Length: 412
Ligand code: ATP
Ligand code: MG
Image (cartoon, rainbow, N blue to C red; front, side):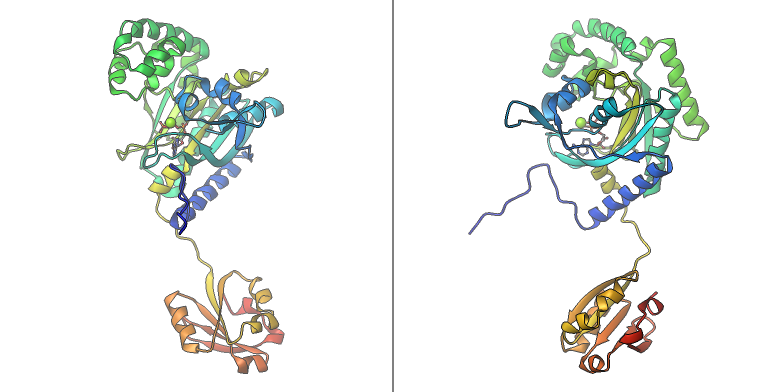
């Protein structure tokens, strides 16, 4: 006997009600993106490792321990993409011309994390980006879209928006020095990974999930005290736009997001419900990213949402369903000879074909599976070039001739 081949750890099949929800989320996402004039892009799943090392940052969790990297035939290091923004930034670096380039995408991302509920090694993200727009209105717009999307899939009043400003790279450098001086004195008490980060990328210590690190960080200098006046103004503009449009938010000065490329606005949407994985959507401004991966300097802002986390939260949507038709024939060849499929494919109906001699069985099956109509062709109907169509709800029954059959008049 052969062993079963199992799923790879941290991966899953999307099927049944999950795929219905997936498609529903995607449809709402597409609609809202189209409404706000975003254009779709699909970037490759594999990219050069350097894209993420330079963009996301060497000392981040993603690059330091979560990436699926392999050597291609020669010596090129290739990665399965852990996130979508870097790929879009790579595209924009070669294709951006002027004005705001508004793009959306979705698809699988790969991170070698410890699998848990809501945390997988292959998972799906929705993603929007506005490239080339330095106006705080862009920050507001992406956050507004996120909020509308979550409402449209039935999560109204179930989430909160946390925001912060992490300033410009200069603000971060100044802050980083102060943070370094503070943490240096406590170095021995920090976790091992934070000790490594202290020298290489002090700011990343703020992402630490270690509770002891978090206690130490609580008393550390705050980034908000290092923001320049223009950064404070920018942040204030974003907050004003959100407030004037009725988007509530909570300011969280510890929110720094786990990637190096962020500047200015950082935000997360979290569920009120206390769950371990309750961040459903997160993003921010990344005015330096494109200059880190190319010779161009173009600002950007965007977000990503975790589709699996959304799937776990929403209820199965109810759609206006197609009518269901059971085609029940005594002999399968009748379907072809009457070209029934040609007739059926012209109308909005979901159908199934069954063959056999026991007419009672057809009716039992139709009843059990909630069919609305049954179309019968027995030997007698076949010889008369006719069909019997019965409406199973009204019980009305008609005999119709094939030569002038128009089912669109009958099934609605
Ligand atoms: P976390 O702190 O939960 O690890 P993150 O900061 O790494 O999240 P982002 O890179 O900002 O996450 O990704 C945006 C969203 O994608 C997250 O808010 C989450 O909903 C989803 N996401 C991230 N990692 C995973 C994963 N491994 N499995 C499922 N969804 C994920
Ligand atoms: Mg993570």
